[in-house]
Length: 77
Image (cartoon, rainbow, N blue to C red; front, side):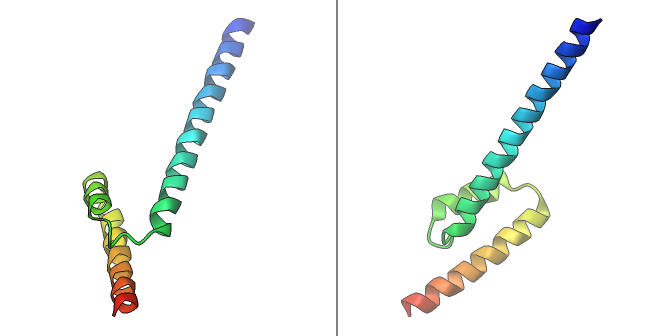
């Protein structure tokens, strides 16, 4: 009986570690995307459009792309 409890606790800890690692990796990726100007990178735009199936994420992405393009146009004018 004790071995089963210990096994469940260890498996639960491993699952929580994997979840924390995935969230951290996602957060770092989002910081990297937000730090660069996505208007100039067509390959990144195509990859993000394909990967974002959530419509609210698409709206957020389109808004960021539009603002980045405006900034790029103003700086290069």
